[in-house]
Image (cartoon, rainbow, N blue to C red; front, side):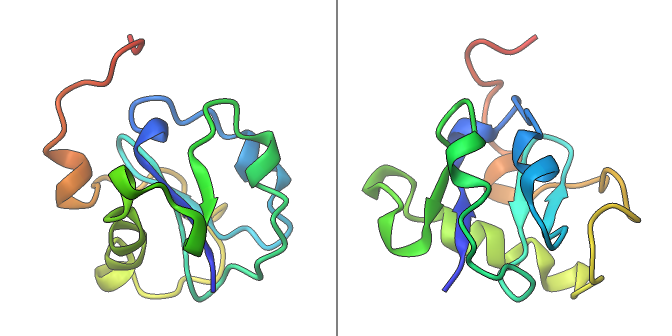
Length: 108
């Protein structure tokens, strides 16, 4: 089981969750953040600090964002398991579902 970052994060990337994560498993794409499912220890520290309520326990992702479990898993198909996001910085891509979204409301 793991936590999932859903659509409300797209074009926001607040990063309060990154600062709170004790295992450095939240990676930054161009438009969204992603939780590595194999590196996440299910501590839940990220969920309450997200200002846009984009983080959910895998079984609690709202129906309208159900594909975001797959989005978070597949983002790492090419990347693998680097063992920590801090050393990578922003990754110059996003999952195709995120990349195809129009700019999200309230973004610059």
